[in-house]
Amino acid sequence: MIFIINYKDQSSTLLSATTWSDAAAYAEGTGKVISSINEPNNSVLVLNSPLSDNFYQLTLVNKTTGVGSLYFLFEENFQSLSSWIALQTNFEVTNISYLQRNYVAI
Image (cartoon, rainbow, N blue to C red):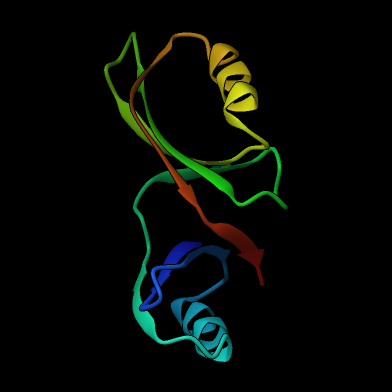
């Protein structure tokens, strides 16, 4: 499962964990004050550059069905993100946001 952990110091982490309890235990172990732990619905994680803290959140809509999907991407930079988007045939980007966020898998 994917979790977004937000801390009081305005930093955040995208975490892959088996359970919400595992995510909470990780967050508590950071020593930071936790603001929230959220589990986004129907999201897709793409780790093109897992060590990067360049986090992009995109909504891609299928041009045929009109169904939108939420994507979380870690990329080196905006140019590599643009290259990835260009490879997504039959999809249109309807929303994109950038945030510095790290990725952790437990």
